[in-house]
Image 1 (cartoon, rainbow, N blue to C red):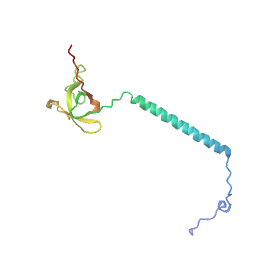
Image 2: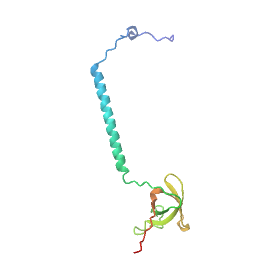
Image 3: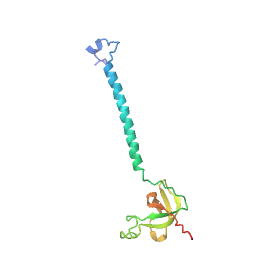
Image 4: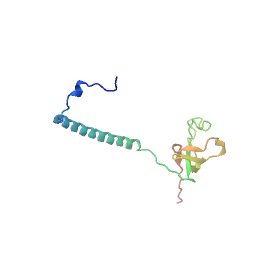
Length: 135
């Protein structure tokens, strides 16, 4: 009531200055830290293996303005050009006008397509001309 906390029996007992350390507990704690480090390293190795496996078939493509590319015609975006499964899945080649973001490019499309000219890099593949050699 008066702003002073009352004394309890624990407050009256003197705290020993020497603290007893259990050597068994200390060695057990060291073993646990060592085990945690081993587990952490194993998890890191496993994650790196998963990452390498997942990125094994990823394409790292980079296009410049002026490059020619094939455009993958997705059914959702081009319903009039992909009416059945026997129709062509790609169209092009189209010229890249500019890089819009880290994974998006703006293409020069013909006027009859009536869609946005910006496409993700996943919808593009490089155009390679066939070299015909004369005998």
